[in-house]
Amino acid sequence: MAVRRPTNALALAVLSLLSERPMHPYEMSSTLRQRHKEDSIRLNYGSLYSVVESLHKKGLITARETVREGRRPERTIYEITPAGEVMMTDWLSELLSEPTAQFTDFEAALSLVATLPPGDVVPLLARRLSELAFQSRAYEAIRAAVPDGFPRLFVVESDYQQALRDAEHRFVTELLAELEDGTFGGLAVWQRMHELRDEGLSPEQTQRTLLAEFPELEAMMPEP
Amino acid sequence: MAVRRPTNALALAVLSLLSERPMHPYEMSSTLRQRHKEDSIRLNYGSLYSVVESLHKKGLITARETVREGRRPERTIYEITPAGEVMMTDWLSELLSEPTAQFTDFEAALSLVATLPPGDVVPLLARRLSELAFQSRAYEAIRAAVPDGFPRLFVVESDYQQALRDAEHRFVTELLAELEDGTFGGLAVWQRMHELRDEGLSPEQTQRTLLAEFPELEAMMPEP
DNA sequence: ATCGTAATACTCTGAGTCGAGTAATCGAGT
DNA sequence: ACTCGATTACTCGACTCAGAGTATTACGAT
Image (cartoon, rainbow over all chains, first blue to last red; front, side, top):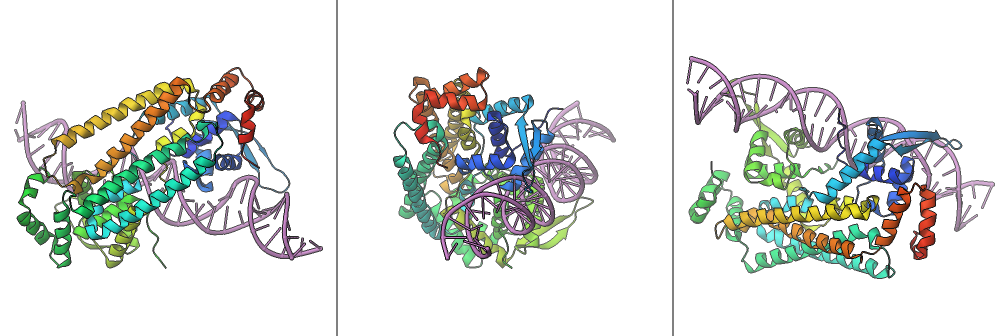
């Protein structure tokens, strides 16, 4: 029976840490934090311990020993198994080589943006822009403080974050501009839809009125 | 007692649909699919029904009626409550206006990339590049087939996706170039680390040897 | 000497998530 | 008339996750 791959990237981080050297869970969490990996990999105790347990059950890691110092809770030190090594390289290779849909919050929100009236959306996006700019400046400041010749290897994930943030900033800037100068495609329908709803029309009446006022919509309705 | 906000964007989609008109869960899923929202919001039946139940328990939606046709399973038609409307606009507004950490797979993978030897990473990234290019072309093709004057409102989330994909493509291209021409900061240490590990040195020996061969690393170790 | 805070090291519980499964109906073809 | 796949509509159970809670020790400040 082929072992099913976990979905939580924290499991990959655990395997990666154990491929360096044996550790107990708490040490994994401190190490990840020290290396700023919690910025890129969601980390909390509850998940960590259940992820470790699940890797253990699947035979991808084994308990090497459990030590107890004084009356402190026991620490179980784990190490990676050969099967774990294989799973780790396969998994990491796949994540690096295959782009997959990511379901981010902002994309979800954008896909539902028509729910709010356009007039409300403009200030919200403006606020996002300034937050993005702020985060960007924070990143630049940290970047500038880093000594020359510091291995990019250790910060490549935050460079990636910055590249995406930058792209998002450009995208939202453009979107906002189109909303403000009225060139955004569909703006009139969007606006009118909320007007009709606010006047108390039923969903069906709203639908009918919109189709009457914007006949070009007809052609764009999804086929059967 | 303030109602805790769900974390699953599917709950937001449910509220958004019900703010249009009352529906039963299965219709929600078909509507989301028809509008291609499953590309931006993770959708599966198990989650949908438990998300709906949880919204119901929290008083954000109510069951308007349950109908049964023939011997088919019952359909419960839900509608949104005033509390649900408030929660929805607040939530959507927050998602639009506040950028938050997103923990994507590729960022996680990048943060652990040192686990693989650099020589293995190069072809993986090359493969990612060509996949990204392929997805980009698919998007452009669809975009080109869309009639003139089609409301951008309906596809803004896939435009966003494309903007991010584009940025990622540029980032990976640059990264790959640096890896191939040897200008990537930390490449030598990275390479050497895997050589030492492959020669069978213990983690501690590897650590010591690296510090001896690359004394500049010393200054970059995390402070206590 | 003791007080409070941070750090160490987990545990527990409830909620959320997902995929597979069930069971009926509809419509296109043979 | 029949059958086969698609569609409609939901249910179930095993797993996963998050956050709060617990208990001990270390350490600087009062």
